[in-house]
Image (cartoon, rainbow, N blue to C red; front, side, top):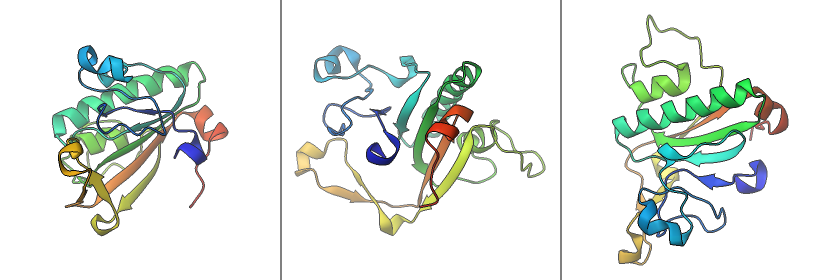
Length: 173
């Protein structure tokens, strides 16, 4: 993502698991993490352009808050004709009653009558099979940074403004 799409920031990380090759991240505790480079809570972070990765905690309430915040930034960026991209990684919770999924794909919490109208920012949905990926534990320093096998399929969801689609289009690969 960094090489092909100029990813510049992780929205949910900590000093112990932030990707050093990206070099910019948000974390939960600004007071202790700022000295390690954190920008503070993602929910207090605002951008209008660029490319960001959001892998929130897999708790529906947090995932809803995440996508609401992202949608607000995308709307503002769209109004100002800015190029803004978000790569969102979440569990494959795509049932009709999953509000975070509905907000991401359809721009609203409820799908009525299997409405097919997508959010104007939705670009792509990629299902990642649970056998083809893993996670690094947030307290990985305790177990020599071992990886955890994914227990479920995951989704890579891409949201972009109109300008981002022009300036940083996704290829089919």
